[in-house]
Length: 273
Image 1: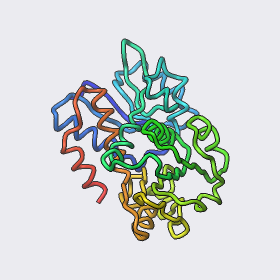
Image 2: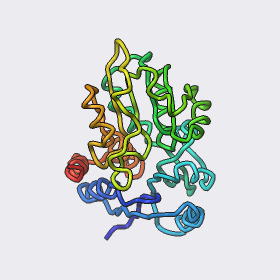
Image 3: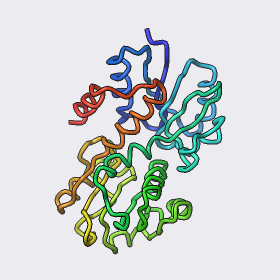
């Protein structure tokens, strides 16, 4: 029987595969843990955190739309969470419920392997909690030419100011060349937005003297409309399972002191086929 309870909170959670990778990890490594799914409406978040403090919950993953709203409800943050300004992981330390952010590690892992030039023009689409981790990871890695746009033409402005990004109107997002294009919006996610994309690659010129890449943090489905369009226009694609597994592995390591086993990655790939 599981002795330790973990889980993911978000609204909605129908597409989440976090329970699959973490429960595979617990079972494969013979650890006494179970990972559950809790759909928590925004208005119920404070009450849910109050309940967590009275129940045997050892850790939580946090996803849309709670990554920022959960912060003032915690006892403290790691330096990574403070730098990003968003939380995706909750854990206990010295009797205090603290917030961490493992999205930076997960997002940057496949890019570090490519040894990209710091002057590569980047287009970041979206400004939610995950976009904060993306912006933090890129700026910490030394990328200097980052444009950001959102459909609202408003929500990206604080993020641009925080990280020194260039805010551009949504209708102008295709106007300048981009070597790396990143989707952090929900467009393309399985469900009502599946089949939608925030970018028309036919209208976007690749940047000169650098690779042409497209990176979608959406991982379900594995090949989104965004990536399919990018591939059709000759871009190298990075799918969201890279970031998803990387951040999940960092969570599992914080909670258990062990990395997710290869069986967890295999289970994820099988589920996304």
